[in-house]
Length: 78
Figure 1: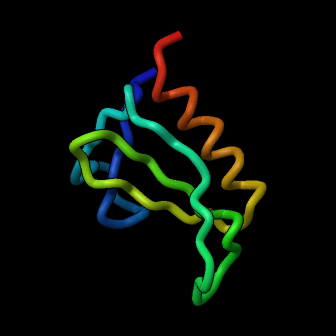
Figure 2: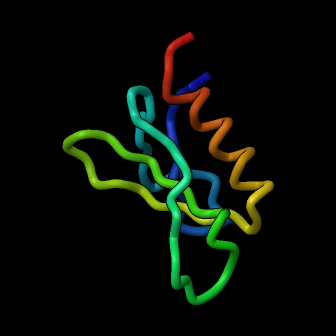
């Protein structure tokens, strides 16, 4: 497992514009009230001391749970 988050400029791109190693980061759901659109239960955040937090929103809470589970697995050595 790479334990890296790849960031692409567009969904059809084949090369990432940025990579972020996520080992040692924390991931958890972010309660987001007053959102303009979407499911507030589908928001989650990656945090690491000394780094800017990364906020994500999945299409729904079920997908968010899958993302959080996968990211939690990627952020720790097993």
